[in-house]
Amino acid sequence: MFLGDWTSGKSHVPGHWVSWQGGGKMTGRTVSRFSWGDSEETREQDDSLTPSPRRWTKVVAIVVCAAIGLGLLGFLSRRFEQSASVRSPQEPQQPEKFPSGDSMFAETVVVTLPATADELVAEGKRLADELMASFPDSPQALLLGGRIFDLFGDLDKAEDCWEKCLELAPEFAPAWYHLGEAASLQGEYGEAVKCLEKAIQYDPSRYRMEVVPFLADSLMNIGKAEEAVAVMEKAAAVGPLPMEGLTLLGNGYLELKDFEKAKQKFEEALAIDRNSASLHYALARTFAGLREPEKARQHREEYARLTAQRLAGAPRARAQLRARDAADVRPLARECYLATGEFYAEHNNKEQAERLWLKAAAVDPRSAKPRRLLEQLYRLQGRPESAVLIMRGIASEGR
Image 1 (cartoon, rainbow, N blue to C red):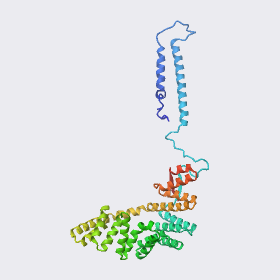
Image 2: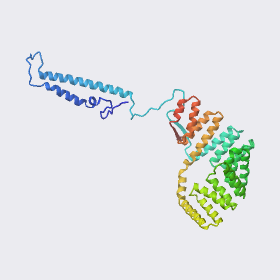
Image 3: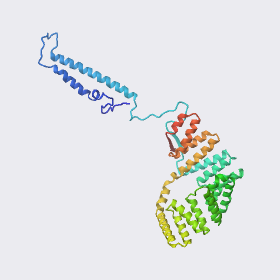
Image 4: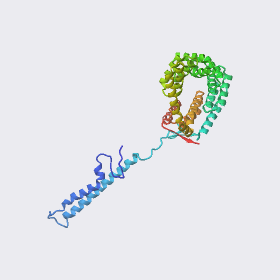
């Protein structure tokens, strides 16, 4: 690629610097060289037939200047033709087009999205209603609809969906799990225990580890600490517990007044997070039970320090939460679009899946998953240009 800067007269073509930028100077040097013939030399020739040396000098100078001018004009013409065939870096890039009939997209896919957080939430709920209306006898559709309502804060509607699941399929473990989780979060611990035990009963391999924290916590809250500890120890035998699991197990032992085992679990959890105020409080209680007042005092002081630090930052944290608004809803909307799109794709409605995945990519441009799903869809449909294009850019427009 080569292209000169026409405003400065510079060329990036090797060997063209002198003949282009220095054209005027070369012409001057050439005229000067041929003017050397203007000397005192004389020739004995007939003045009427032979020009004088001065006249020859003028003629030769005129011819040379004309030749140089023609050469320069030809060079500039060639450069102009070359520039017409080479796109300047400063010129705007023309958008790539698909072959006729291959795609509905241009260079950038433009997707219309709801403009506000409230509109995003309303669209998510509308998608859930449409999904369940399209598949009224599908427990999976009702489960997904409930999850979408739960995602956007409508727990009552979510529970209605999951209860309808169980009317269609009484042993449908996912519905039992979500109902138990919802009951636990609302403080309905007896109901939570019943539902979560059903989830484990109907699908132990899938739901044991997911159910354990809610089940153990619910058992603790209805005064069944021993059963809660048994549930957690069974989970610990399968694999290492996370910090929350260790804390829950430590609280179980603390409730049973087994202070040594409580201390062991709390210290394992504290090794994961040294700045957990609740763990320091639990250890203060544990060391008090072990009759170690100095260690109990140290953990009480650390609990007080961390709590004061958290409260000092609370106003700023609340202000940040108020400022986020729609940004908080976008990841939820992305998950809604992705999940409903996958459901439609599994039920052979590729057009609806494509629309929803495009919205998922637009609502959260940093997420790679919707682009990957779209790329796979386009390649399966024999649309390789669309697959390449979708990885380049998706823009969103608010309604």
